[in-house]
Image (tube, rainbow, N blue to C red; front, side):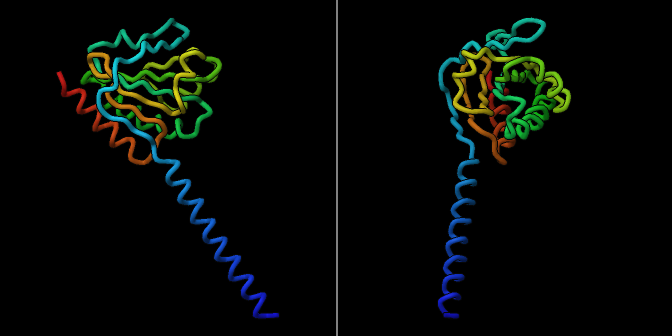
Length: 175
């Protein structure tokens, strides 16, 4: 009987170990952001609403623009925003702009969140119609000086900040 009990404990530990490994692998691969690089067509005219009026992506022609779709309740968004703010501070003098496009239901939660996160770039609310065009949040895309989408990413991971910096630098160097 003692041998049988030992075997049962051993098999339970093996099964628990295998399940743990599968969960770790699943979390690792589900947290890798999906990226697309290269020309992907003209950028849609994203419009964000703010108390002072509307901001249109098309008004930023001639600049490299990151459109970051996020929400105040989104954990990965909370992780990505400090990196985006650092990039904005570093590259804004070279012609880099950021439009933070919140999918929150109302503007009420946005200003306190912006203060908490130290956001200094343009932020507004997406209309519900436009918000449904994005597969997940955070979702970000880079628009070149000619208004073409050149890079996009769904999700946020450890390598995103470096990749985003590399993409912004490349687009800022283009004529």
